[in-house]
Amino acid sequence: MASTVNIIPVGGGKGGIGKSLISTNLAVGIALSGQKVVLMDGDFGASNLHALLGISHPLYGFQDLFISNKSPNSLLIETGISNLKFISSAGDNPGSANIDSERVKKIISFIKKLNVDTVILDLGPGTSFNVLDFFNISSHGLVMSSPETTSVMKTFSFIRSALFRRMSRKLKNISALQKLVDHSKPSSTDLETYNVTTLRENVKKIDQTQIEKVEEIINEFKPAIIINRVRSKKDLLAGDNLVNLVKKYLDVELNYIGYIVESDKVRESVEDMVPFLIKNPQSKPSENLQQIIGTLTNTDLHLVKEDGRIYVSKQVRLNSGWDA
Image 1 (cartoon, rainbow, N blue to C red):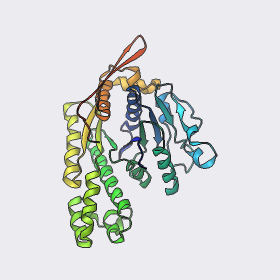
Image 2 (image 1 turned 135 degrees about the vertical axis):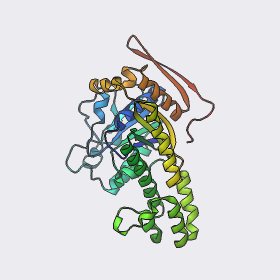
Image 3 (image 1 turned 180 degrees about the vertical axis):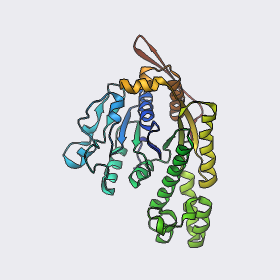
Image 4 (image 1 turned 90 degrees about the horizontal axis):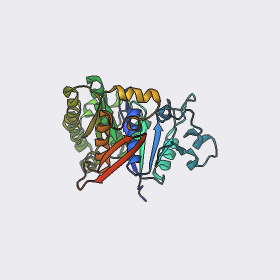
């Protein structure tokens, strides 16, 4: 039976772009809108997401699924925020990042069985197979980038790697095509197939009957992009540039769903270990994020803080802003 949980993996090719920070505040905002949400730390080698929620030392994490008899539900940690629970990766032990494929399958199965509305899965940086496989749990993952050219190119590489990894997994029973879609061994890989046009041509040469499957994989892959740390109108173009790059070379429709402006309010919230959406819900970054949450949840969300309390107003939109 297909999972009814809305899983939103958040990835990015480059570290230090604020991915964990935005993942945390997305989870907070969606929870405040009334959904039951689980925020999961998917960085198995450098677990630190808990600090952004003000949680000092998580008692349990994913490692407990493998080294103890803890029940899966015991991993759910209360955050003190209505409708929001947290799961730590507990990845501070040597070797904790090197989880094998069986453990990846066990974690994915665990995620899909959660009795919640939405799971936000904050992934580690880079394009390791573990990261890509978690990102590909959903066809509608979120990708983070900052406006700098190096970050934009890393983000493009992440999206390309995720697509080719997706193809490799779905075409794994056709050995003749693996050379075209498996880029784990560059010396034995046809590097020209890093763009989809050439890939299609080569697939047709090897097995014409599989081109329909390739098209299906491309068409179902619909990630979205958020640009963080925007300082100027020029920075806003980074999202448009990514949309154009991804369409030109991968023929994938990347959805530019919003941006977050650079602000001292965000830095202050990190120092205070309080999500900026709660600390300053009427700040510009919070307004940006509320618009993004509105797109993800098909609502118009508005948060106001008065006398230390947050008031939430929400209206359901007639038209969806994100093709889910």
